[in-house]
Length: 462
Image (tube, rainbow, N blue to C red):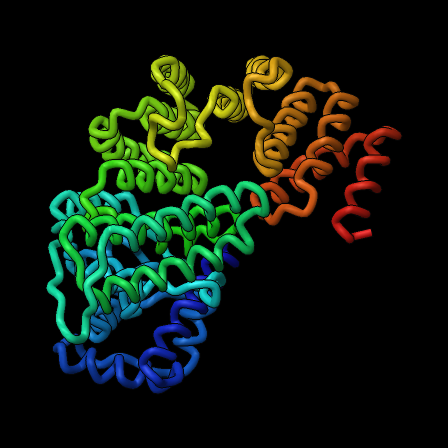
């Protein structure tokens, strides 16, 4: 844990130095001078002080923190809320602008431009605390929707045909991610977002067309965020989801808003913040009520059930599960619902319930739900799931067998999972499989040894 703190302090301080165009010693001398100007007295500026801060051996004292925050333009309440070294993020102008730019259409465009793209996939940590999340949701509730932009010599007028074409491309991207995984789809979604930004900045449109463009920008950012999650980059995903939420506010579109909040909730509970996930789900439900979409509402109940399961609250998780299944019973044809919830079906619901049971250490209940998924496929009432989805389910099913001591069934199912994932780019799928492999490795049986050898050959680690 200490090493992780050291790494964050080192990385964030270095980014601040780079932004201020100075090295650590120069930064320290500037800080000492600012410390004096604020009437805080003399501050020692020996070179080893920066070294200790970077290595996590010490941190700035109260007066040095006050001086540093003032010099870098970070409010003290945020310094106290985030703590060291996290508050240094707000000293980085791009991150501060993304968090603090006005919730207006022009502020949305600025946020969309700041998020970055493929080259930023390895970007620095971007942490949003539960308190910051609550403030963002309050700002989003008061966001200004897009209005008409008048035509001029510099801005050619476009009609609703343009957003329709963009919407079709985004629908294709959603299905492409299902089949090839997040790696390549991420770059495509970022390119779509840049194209939409260019359209917003360089054309004229009616209020209705403008809101559709902002809705498309939100969906492109939402897809980028999901791909970042699946590729193992949660910090970058947070940036995309924040940009998507801003864009959804400018679009004033309840479907886009509820869907964005639901996906962001998944990221929050997956990274250890079930409370923040539930904040997002509560906000999403208020918009889902305006969509008349049982599938949308069902998936939000599912997000809540997953958050409660991650928090270890069995009763609340099962209550949300029941609401999920009950709501889905009212769903009609997928064609009658928003396009973005095309993937919600009975199997998905049982998959979530199975994962909840596994998180709550009830592997028998998990296998009951997995059996319901298999039966649904045998009847031919559902299309085959995308390879990543199937592989994730099989991995978790194998984990349930292993928890019950059925090694043979675990290995058999794990082999299916590896074959099913194939070459689909999914860090999430690979991580789950690696975790399962490590659990199996402690069992010295011929079947396990065969699986481990096969796994290493497939992954190129032999």
